[in-house]
Image (cartoon, rainbow, N blue to C red):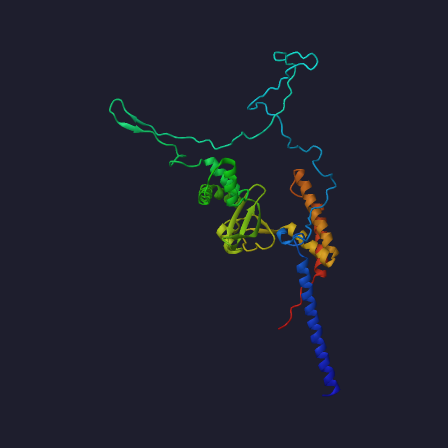
Length: 367
């Protein structure tokens, strides 16, 4: 082998090693970035942060003192005009003369009230009796009709069933905890199967309500969409949410994407704006807007992990945009003045150019 051939071989080996080092450095950087992500700088849920990682919030300090603010309406328990029971506490004797005060004149009444559960709380039981009555003229026996809430010999009423369903579905208590609570408070010996049946009955009763909510969401000018993983029957499923400031619809589905959204039936026919994290661009019936909370988290990651100054400036700009919009709406408007919007747009595009320069698209390797 000639000296030139050996040098060419070493050069080729050097190029291959440099390429391998570059690929390894990229892999190390990718792994370090993955480890640095948590709920404050990515879309990962707070439950994935672990015990050692201190949670951080995107909220900035308001400058106000902690606690209730001046003018804030508190939740102080107030006296009621008509209490259920009044107990008078009259002094027996005058402390100076020891005169009996049983019939003395009352010159002032100080009032204090105690809100308390009645002792020995138990469910009141109403017995319905259908009377068999004989006609005095023809001797025909007529039978009174039982009300709809008493279809069998013994049952629980609608209100206690509603409370049990509320504890499971709204407060997210496990079935066993609800059974224990009902037993402790009202001595109810409730089977788990009965509780599950009540939940299924409530779901059937609320089907028209759910449909009304879906119809209203479809007509809303702007919707929020998101999903999170849940366990259903020991398997991974997805809880999908569609909401406005006043309405919320939840749906559990085994899929995460198009199949689930088509089965839910809101987003595919929604003509308004869908606000989401970027994973819902599956339908063209609506316009799409990306959630700025996710933007702030991702910008936080670039600022903290890669020390990119443009990311911090973009976070400041997004917050200024929101503050200006909130101020305009508080004044009865819809958006900030045109001049303010034009300045925001100019700054936005300048920062976007800086971000693209700092994060150029990866070079695709030719196979």
